[in-house]
Length: 181
Image (tube, rainbow, N blue to C red):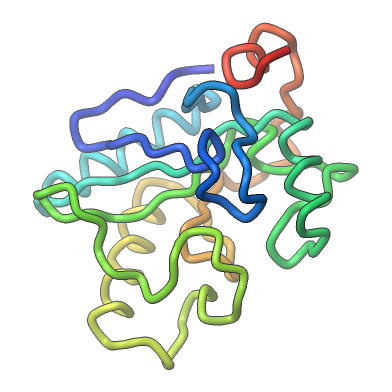
């Protein structure tokens, strides 16, 4: 697992704070980790964003299975939260939740916040302002050009394709970097 580090990426791990759907911190430390292939794809996306004078803000990356269970217990709805019995792309280290920011580091308007589990968070919504649609489309374009797939119900979620090729990561060393174990 690689730590995310790039001049065009800010880290704002929401699950290390109470600013998430559970209302409580899930992670003990704000460690943003990714599988090496996902890390490389995120670096490509950050380079593409920087070329447009933009930045990325990462809200979540690798998520230990225990954290996935905490989310599932809060919202057991597979539309928005992967069933931990099946496994999450986050728990495989190949998913990232993020947004796009301007050169000043301020997040661009996306129509809803991160972890807003309503239909307004779906890609392709026409009931959000045109500038917000453009921002979502720009993020989608950057991420797909860098090799990511999108989750249709969450404008902020991207993962590598062929998720079944990547095992769930639950080794003590990696989990300890994110959670108190």
